[in-house]
View (cartoon, rainbow over the protein chains, first blue to last red):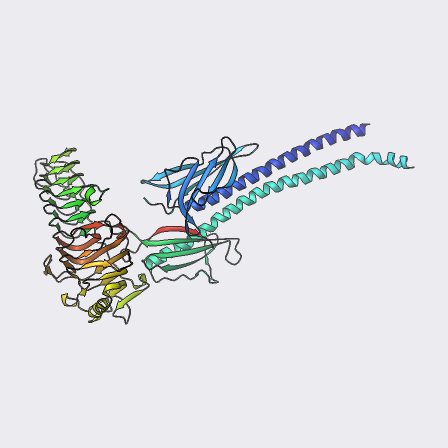
Length: 152
Length: 488
């Protein structure tokens, strides 16, 4: 009897721990995947923005950016936009001037991704801020990109 | 017997179950730790990926530094070879080539952590061009006179005085760094001119001396008559004054102001005089021109290797190819004089044309520089390093000029409202330049004229075109104008 009671207590504790471990594992895996997506977005967006010649200021907002850049040396118009009516927002990319889009991230807590900075009258800096939302927290990833080919 | 065995084995049952569950927990712990490690690894990979770009950038910077010293520089670790140059966090290879338009294209490939066992490879391409050296439509190191209904669209600079004679239109600014500015009857210095499609200029006049305007003369921007440092300003002084005509912006003078001023009028007020700008210095380097045709054709190409027949031989080439002239030519004449001048009368451009010579250049009489059929735009760069003898004269009637043209020599500018078409011409000389009886509607020269001394007469209309702001040979600095990341 005593054996069964002790066994029951141990089993309950172990199962509880196991369940917690399952939850933690799932949380970590989700954070890993969300952050991985975020890093891919930042790498890709940085690469494109770094080569950009100009940002279409009339068509760009905090949630949309349209800019002329290069894709492997070929002039290309890129459009990135955060879409959705409530969190989580999706981030989409177009490499053909906005004709078609591909979803590259889907865990944004805020659609306000882009901030623009002008120096000497030239918009030559874009700050990209991704607020990545997981089940347990929201983590911002931010990068400043200087447009190497920006001209007035 | 079986029941007895079960009863005996119950004594170790809890331990077995506990060990099994602990094993399960350990597996779960390992999974959790692995998930954490995976995130760390991904973060490290991102850092390495970024470092690879920095390594490639080191290759580009290496090329820029070396090409700034020696345009004939060749990398010790060219792309495609088995040799790598060591960088801070990896290896790089680099290569470069000169484009036909004078630009230099550098490509650098970065390897992380090494070329022999690369984990990441990134490649960038950077286009380098000379730093902008030509931003004025007219530049003279000596006094500058614009006469007889000329229209200048662009800024005008003189290291001494500027005279804009009667009825001139300058859509731009006037800067006289070492003298005064005289603006004749009904001449206007404007910010915009709808009739000629000119806009975006300051319409200012700035002198280290007096600004003297005649009847009907107008300065749309600000007028500033500055005095050298140390001069005491006086609102009643006739030195460094602004007189006559109208100033629509602000007027600031070290001396008095009698002009009609719409903006703020500040007589007796000190201001900083305009900085003296040197004529851009030209340095010939044959490495700058991958398809250079040199006269003489033997020996190294440069001003130290001359020929008594260089100009005549080149003139023979021009005569044979007059209607489809293109390329880059260096003509180094022994003891150049007006009798050994380069003749460019009636040429037609089949593409970009650059002529560099130590001989005088004559653009001829009643000729037009046009484009060959099928050619919609071209850049014409004429550089004469000819120095007329001391005490010689060069004016609109000719004389010993380094660059001279008269009687309707014009440059086909295509659509006057389209700066990307037609001929953009840079005429540069360290000597003297004179133009007479040129221009006129609808022909206008687009580009810039730069000379130590300049005399323009009878309406040579010039429109500044930024296509000529960067020309090889002016300054050793190369600046990146295009940056791309391409597939390695």
